[in-house]
Image (tube, rainbow, N blue to C red):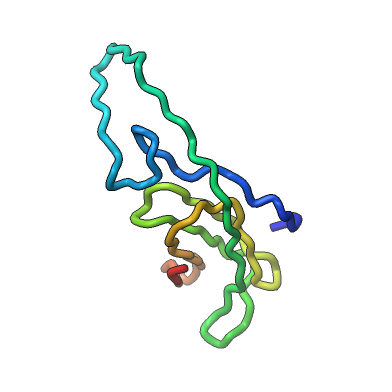
Length: 120
């Protein structure tokens, strides 16, 4: 996907009110239409980010180019990043905050969409 390797892996984790990275500790904010709330402060949580890379292959082990690959955190909350594989089937997705992800490759074809998934 044309990105250069870098040693800078700093970024920000998903942050929920009142300043936690844990969804279970998040508090719901209810704001009515037209209401203004001024006492809310959110501070982003700095973190070391990760990179996922790999190769997408078909059932015969042949690399698949131009396949869309996305990375989804947890149950779809937080980070969701993606891109396409290169002609040799390789991909790299950077900027992921710590956590568990599902990597999904989608190959449209034959009127039906084929999908492969892997947890990381």
